[in-house]
Image 1 (cartoon, one colour):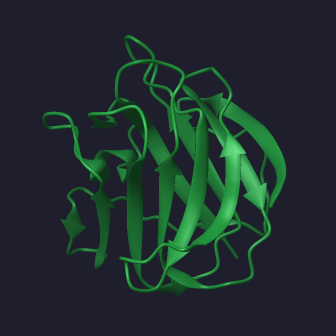
Image 2 (cartoon, one colour):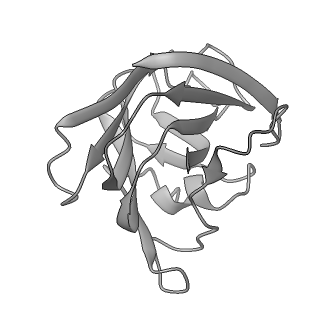
Length: 166
């Protein structure tokens, strides 16, 4: 269940700090980064806007999907983790590619994402990190951002997605 939404600064910097939450996503540079033994997956992509670009800690790159609804991007932590917060930076996008309604889901097999950890609505803004804090006590190996719909008529575009936990 949603607890609170906090606005961070542009360019990926947060305007607050918390000792209880640690960024659980390392810098990854490909879909299956063997340096960190962790991977990202996406429902689809537009051109060369690969899913891992949402996890590369570079707000100048994006994951872009072809359609405006029912798209997702996931991260494989290689071992179960409890995640209690996510930071999402939507892409400005021509024609409105900013996410609107979304879910954070967890899975331990990477296929069945039946457990909804959190549901929320992203504000109609872009290029700013929004932090969504939620209650979750279950450990999952895979977490995904499932985009229900967007504010526009083009695809889904995410600049950065970060998962936090204790």
